[in-house]
Length: 335
Length: 231
Image 1 (tube, each protein chain N blue to C red):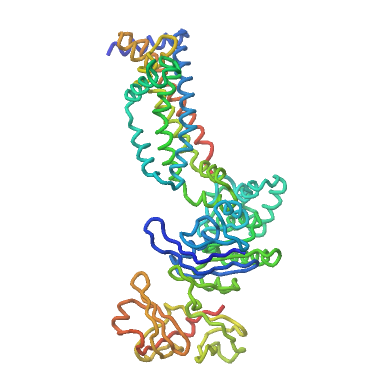
Image 2: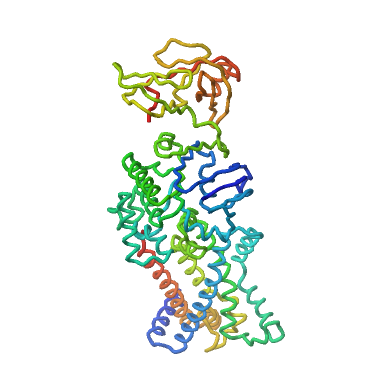
């Protein structure tokens, strides 16, 4: 439905390449999770998909046809974006929910019916009479999503939509998105730096790093089959050629996540309480922001640990170095 | 200091006596100021939006020109317009010299940069997400601009007040192209200058008090407007 082809996009101010994608497609009914660190290019990607900006190079296509600036104005009625920190217009929540409907010439009675339904589904019906300064950040996010859903777009783009929401509100929002998708083929593209959220709700995860789609799945996430309940809480989950000890009562299909910052890195195995100790070789060192390094090692599967530059120097880590990764069973996230 | 006391007493008497000349001057001043403000803001506000919200070649240069024009001396504007409007000038055929229209023209030239520069600053002060949000909800260029204007409405109201204040207090251009003709082009400022030079402080002061009252009324109107919307 919506597609980017050979897109390169640069910051206007300093010309830095911020997005470099050969192809990025959003098919009808898709629920795509875009994951990546802050500054990886997720928000820029969403603004291009929302037709709010034009790529410096390459093209945006909608239903197979290249989008011209004239098309973009019309198509923005079918593609809508909820920004990372959404803003509400002056006036009440009701005025905000009705904004897109008024633009589309929907009658007042119909608009009220539509917006009240959208408000109820997102749990903001009690806020309809309130002004924006009377809302919390989480409420503003829910209102912004309700405002976007009220105009029944074909493609809904969400940038960190639940960063200020509690778990229940986030779950309610994801439920509504899923219902819309099933009912009328709404395509959803959701950017998040919270891998757990993306993995839980999206059925197509795309990782983005430094403006490029990463061919590797996001760090340290593994689909596993957890064995049935055993005597203790700890279980062994097979991942490739290794078995990860996990402290969980869950069983059946699950996704394991090992936070890269919870992995201890050493040259040799050390005596410790960590139940997971794997030795292998460093395959990659990637210097990230704030003096940290992403150390990727093949320990039977590829694992990534985040350590300081100082630690890398002290351990003398280079690609090919022998290395041991250790992490506690309780550090492994299950979702 | 006696002249000040005498002047204030004279001013009070004049205002209470419903002097026809005083009210004629006030009405002409209001007419000129309102027409000039409407034209200057009608052109200047959209120009400000364009300067603040659009990317086009020469935008920076245009902003510099507009900001420089803020400090344009009123007498120089009067002089230039005099050259244009005098019988031998390129606009002499209009026959506007020494008419209220010439004063309006001068005031528009002076107030236009104020309206454009200050409204550009007001629009630049609005969160850019407002325009993007309006656009992503399906608004076209005009509706998106309207959404931005609603956010900046207090600042834009202040722009209109500033333009009106500048126009109503302007004297250099009004004196040169208006000629200060009694009953025709005599505004509050030119009249104050004239009667002061003639030593008629009471009359000059009375007109000065009215000028201040006009400015006060406009500011009160703005404050009432600002007090209304808080959301």
